[in-house]
Image (cartoon, rainbow, N blue to C red; front, side):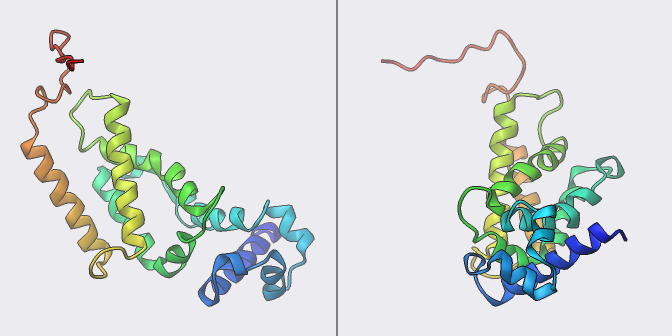
Length: 197
């Protein structure tokens, strides 16, 4: 492992340790550096700020390891992502409480979008490329993921139970949707009724 990666990993380990002890806003760059014995100059050589460090932890822990071509289906990707978050749930529950610009929640929504779009290939009708549908379902899935990580449900569910609930909802919706009625079919003759003024 290069010196650069050793430094970044040491800073990341200190950040994770400190986030178990106190809220993110009470942790300074000096606290992180003091905890792992690395000077502030080295910190700022690798990271813009402590927000950047938190986001890097997710990037190096999951995103950089991802190879979409290795998955046969979006469900396999979703399972891997949920299992990763479940293993690291203490850290991510703390990370999701971070507020403001460059927050982890903002970074997660941006970074996970391509993964969710890959996942949607198994859900949306074939040849359906309408960005509205992609955005709508992606936003719903990501909001549900955040709520799950924040433990916002009536009981703590593991990754398998959460995935099963998502699959149940999607299967149920897919079985009850009349695509043409909702204007999803690519039929140029379909007229959308105009709202009366």
